[in-house]
Amino acid sequence: MLRKIVTLSILIIVSFMFFSCSNDITDKQGNSVVKGVVSEDSSGYFYYLPKGYTGKEPMPAIYFIDPHGNGREPLEKYAALANEYGFIFIGSNSIRNGIQQSQVDSYFKQMQARVISKYSIDIKRQFTAGFSGGAKYATIIASKEKTISGVIACGGTIVFSGDYIPDFYYSGIVGTYDFNYLEVMATLNNFARNNLDFTMVEFVGGHEWPSVESFESGLTGLVIYNMKRHLIKTDNKWLKTIFDIQLAKAAEFENAGNSIDQYKTLKQTDRWLTGLINTSDIRQRISRIEQSNNFVKAVNLKKELTLLESNLRVEFIKAIENKDIEWWKNEATKLNMPFNYSDESRANIGYRLKNYISMACYMLIGNDFKTSEYDKAFKKIQIYELVDVTNPDVYLMYSKYYLLTNNAELMTVNFSKAIDNGLKNIKIYESDPNWKALFDNEDIKTIIGKNEAL
Image 1 (cartoon, rainbow, N blue to C red):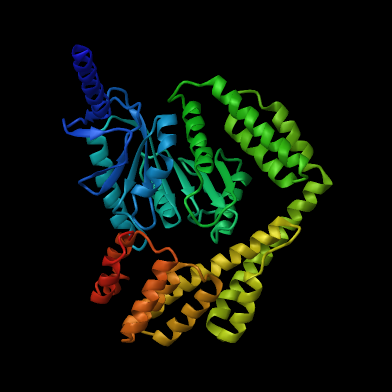
Image 2 (cartoon, rainbow, N blue to C red; image 1 turned 180 degrees about the horizontal axis):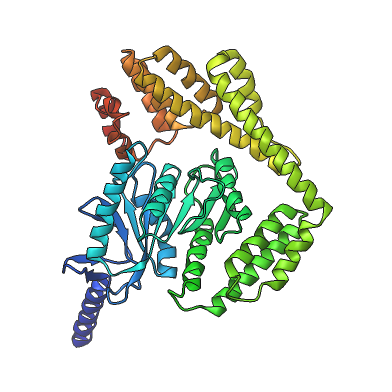
């Protein structure tokens, strides 16, 4: 019995040692790195090596850019996709909103050079991905760096000329409530008019990193693009699965009487699969939809609503400066009412307008602080609160206002409100020059110290 116990103990110890070390490997420089875990490099980026990484076979890489310089967040969110598709994920901590493009270029080149020197990267399959302002940086990098062959731009875009043809693959993803919805869709619709190969993804949500499912659709576009470039073997079985999934989605939209989304789904299927499998049946379906009266009416209505939304955005921006708080209380009441339109498109306009006003207030308040126009800033913070009452940034703005106007009591009260409304990732704020004075305040530090969750 004792011999059995000793033998079992040895097996347990050996097994533990094996499994605890199975994810530990060395990089090209002989340093220990871990796969299957989001880890931080000493030079200022996070990395995720998929569980299938050995260092012997080169793997494609995606460089993620978060608008707040939070390189960890997208890697943790999409790690399962890195494992499934065999991608190395890199998240920058240095690139963030507000820095000059020259700095962005420099930070990216330094990060990319270090990544290539450490890990086994497939040089021809390097991509960028970004959210919001990070999407803009990611796209600019892809347009300038010939080593980058594609981008997944989420909730943000840059203005392209009407006849612009990118020399990189473009996957655009946007939420139906996102205040950048019109700009992103303008870019994607322009690509469609020019018959370009790209990926368009819409998801039900706001201004945020998209769901795993939505991001996977953007990633699918990159993988298929690599097949078309003969950089990886064409996987006909996987492509047939994609084909079947897309047809099932199109059928759901058709049964629901949603000809617009049925059309978009079939068009995306054709863009993805043309040149790899026979898509003649898909094209015939697309042609029939284009000739239907219901589709033509739906397209015309979509154009009218887009114009309406554009005009309302202009009017609301003017109203931030020109209308008093009582006017805004009435408008905010309307905007905050449930959007129970039978037409989902009209409801989405209402949500996007709220988010657009919120974003505009945030930007304009920052400008007023920089010019020391505190009365103007205070009015805009009030409007900000009316349209986005649960946003912790509203109360950070109040807290900063009271810091600048020497009201310590209300400064701390509103900072606590920011915490109550979900303030997190304070390191992002602490490293932002716009928030430094507030987060360096001793009273604020005391509050932070008492909240371990921060």
